[in-house]
Amino acid sequence: MGNFCTCLVPKTPPVKGKQSQRPAKRLTNPGGPATVANSSNRWSRIRSGSRKEKQNFDDALIQEQALAAAILFRQHQQQQNGLGLPFDRSASLRYPNGSSSKKTQLPRSSSSRARSLTDPLLQPHQLLNLNRDEKLPDLETNHFVLVHGGGFGAWCWYKTIALLEEGGFKVTAIDLTGAGIHSFDTNGITSLSQYVKPLTDFLEKLPDAEKVILVGHDFGGACISYAMELFPFKISKAVFIAAAMLTNEQNLLDMFSQQTGSTDLMRQAQIFLYANGNNKPPTAIDLDKSLLKELLFNQSPAKDIALASVSMRHIPFAPVLEKLSLSDMKYGSVRRFYIETPEDNAIPIALQQSMINSSPPEKVFRLKGADHSPFFSKPQALHKLLVEISKLPSS
Image (cartoon, rainbow, N blue to C red; front, side, top):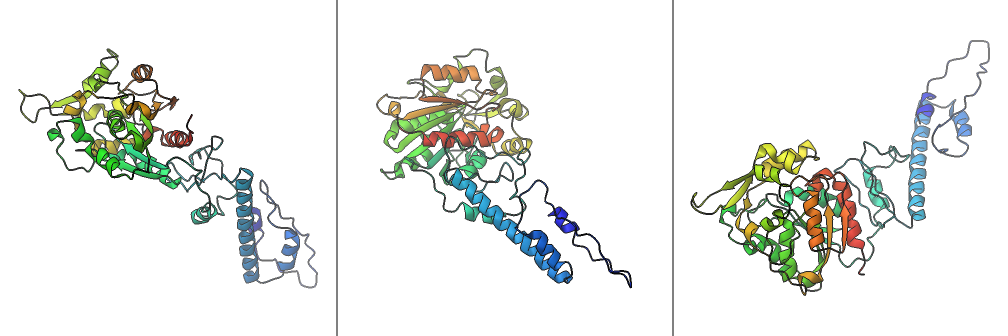
């Protein structure tokens, strides 16, 4: 359209007594498809028209180009068996994607995505309409339940929630007792069952015919393990993300003791709180704010680190000490998957692999370049893995 618009200028009046015979200019559209057949003939017909007629013609061409782009977009979707790629405007904004497969790649961010013919022509609502008939393939469940780690809350999943929901999934993010916006005092939590109660209450109320995919991060891994033992028939799959994947009669401290010297930074960051007095056991754990970035967010954006620094709450101490009781018949019947985070300073990769070797899951994935909080540092890649896991059929 750039070359076309430069031609829309007033004609130079002819010299009196002499007929103007200026050569006709040829319209070109380098780097793009032809807009419409016989466009040069149309141009020659309107050169002598009024400014209003020229403007109307310009508008008509834009409309025709938009229609052509929409048709090309739909044809591309059909060639991909109906699997169209959504257009990505930023890391936190997506348009719905109806379906995907292993061959379908997630859209790249605007900083590296090549501009498309349809970018200036198709608006978000038009893309939404193009994809409105696309549906997810038949899945055992399309419902994700996200469980945060120690000190975090449901808020930490905001990017993952947006990506999954815009992809057609149902998402529930749980605030455990004393976390996020849950009003209970963390220092008053005395057991794992009390801490996990919001999750177990949710699963208990879930209809018997409905299943969910449980996703646990950090200490949330121990929490979903507890829930898997209670409600194995309501859980389709369990996903551990940089999480505590414990064995029977093991607690979080047992897990960390497996790798001596690998969690020095965690020990430096811990601040024990004694709400019942210094002569009593600790009631909660706080984390040194000056070490948060290095410990949890060493690859995460500054804005997400700022969000976490004002949103994180204390970690209840009693649940950390409680040993899990896990059986092969219940906990062991749920399909488990682990997502490794290689740049993790809180649960180092060596410790993650030690847990994997002690209790091998069905499949292990690795998020290259992810820190302890991949929902911040690698949200798109994490989303892709969650969708892939949701589509894995029963073996």
